Length: 155
Length: 155
DNA sequence: TCCAATTAAATCGTGCACAATATAAAAGTG
DNA sequence: CACTTTTATATTGTGCACGATTTAATTGGA
Image 1 (cartoon, chains in turn green, purple, orange, red):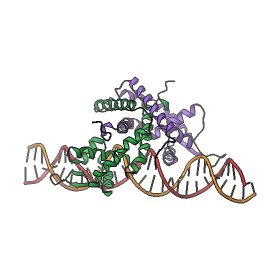
Image 2 (cartoon, chains in turn cyan, red, blue, green):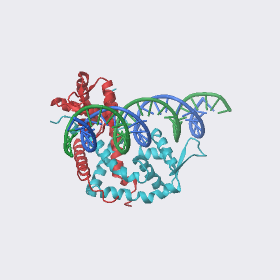
Image 3 (cartoon, chains in turn brown, red, cyan, green):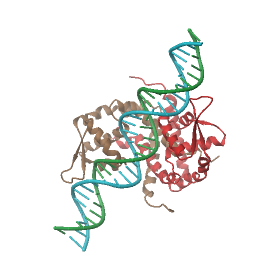
Image 4 (tube, rainbow over the protein chains, first blue to last red):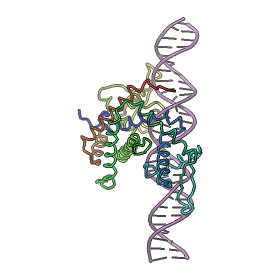
């Protein structure tokens, strides 16, 4: 007992499994919108920022979603190809690429509004528990990211 | 407020982010063993089953880790290439591929024993909280998987 | 027994993640 | 002003995930 190598004791395995299980619940709902889950996350950020009129660059998406350009660049190209966003180099600083919603991209939000509703309905877990779980996860994330910077003793 | 499309209200986003954050904590530790995280999970299953003398086929790994042959076959080929496992067709049923540990694969367990210890030490989150979080996750997984089978009302 | 159905893996194609490197523009410095 | 450094994104390569299809072996009838 208490074997740290036992699969059943690996919290990370639970995380990994639940993440994939929930994502696969999203998949058919998002497929109706022609989006993958990471693409949906990018759209959520863009919809949010559009509301407050904030311009968005690739690095803004990166810091919000914790993804690098190696992941985002091809993903954004696909979204652009589907006509949901525009990618254009900034005049002021030729290094940055500004990402903006097309009309079609903005409009998609209406249809996307049903996604979380349908997902929660199909889930049969009390919302309060999910909220509590989310708070726990966010706390763990903070713990990882704050003290994670320094402190690698040996090696 | 209470916008279901707000990124901050997406429990799945927390799950996605924490999963990646913890996995990236594992990465350097597992790199010392020459393993990726999914490869490590496969090894955990094999080490566990070896203890009770259970033979393991690809589909056993699949049902334990909830992965299909499209993911497992290439992963297992890489483990075989590194000399950690053997893959051989069963005589009794030529459709089945039996996966067994090589001596080297068995031996790796000793070094792997330090991985969870190092990870937990570097994390600075109370173990009880992680255990509680794990239970929550496992409950949610059960909820998803049990009633998930049927019940897709419309469409 | 012949053959349709099922099962176990493998293969193929797409899309992330992420490390490492490259490219090019801007900022900082003597 | 030349020149190093930094910053922003793109590119390349590897390894998952997963849907869809394929291949081949076994099972289950009629």
